[in-house]
Length: 326
Image (cartoon, rainbow, N blue to C red; front, side):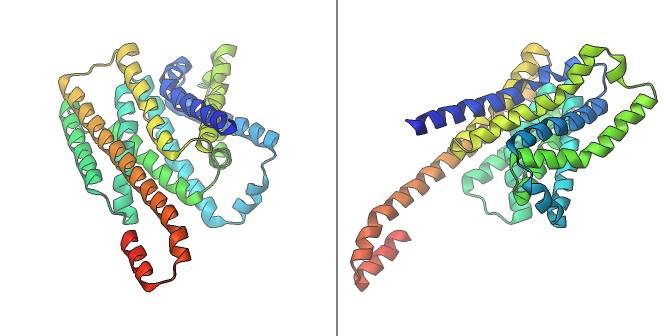
C-alpha cells in the first residue's frame, strides 16, 4: 500500500511540475514593463534566495565544500549556468514578444536534439526507429522554416541550449536543488550587478513599478524553484518512462496557450511542421516502450533460468545458457 501511495504522490508531483512549466507563459507578461534581461536577472537573484532557504531547512550544505575542491566540476556548473541563462532569457523574451507557439516547439524538438547530440558528441548508436524519428524532425524544421519564412531560430536555440544544459548536468551529477543553487550562485553577482546598475540609471522597474510589481519580480524565485522541487519528488517515485511521457505536458500546455489565449497565428505550413514533430515524438515514445518491454522480458527470462543453471554444472547446460543469452 505504501508503494502505491508513493507512486501516486510521485505521479501527482510530476504532473504538477510539468503543468507549472506548461502554464508559466501566463506569468511572464505580468512582469511588463520589465524587459527580458531585467526579469532574467531577478529570476537568478531570487531563485538563489529561495533554494538557499530550502537547503537551509533541509540542512544540505555538505556538497558546497566538495564542489569548491573540484575545479572541473565547478567549471561544468559555470557552463551549465551560462547555457541556462541563454535558455531562460530567450524564453522570457519569446513569451513577452508573441512567440509562445514557437517557444513550445523548442521543447517539443528537444528530445530529438538530445538524441542527435548523443550521436554526434558521445558516439551513441541509434536504432532504426530513432533514425526515422530524427529524420522526421529535420523534415519538420524545414517545413516550419518555409512556414515562418526563416528558420525557427527561437525553437532551435531553446532546444539546443536545453539539450546542452541536460548534457552538462548529466556530467555534473548533482541533485536538483543543489545544482540550481550552484548555478544561480555563479550567476548571482553579475545579475545583482546588472540590477544595481539599472537602478543607478533610473531604469529599474523593481523600485518604480510599485509594491505589487516588486512582489511579482521577487516571485520569480518561487516560480523557478517550485516545479523543480516537484520534479525532484517525482523523479525518485515514478519510473523514468513515466517521466518521459509527462515531459510533453509542458510544451502541449504552452502550445495550447499560444493558440487559444495569446491568439498566435497557425497557418497550414506550421500545422504541418508541428504534425511532423508530433509524429517523430510518437515514434520515439513507441520505440522507448518497445525497448523497455524487451529489456524487462530478457531480465525475467534470465531470472527464471538462473537457478536452474546454477544447479546443473554440465557443459551442455552451459552451452544452452549461452545460446539463450544471445
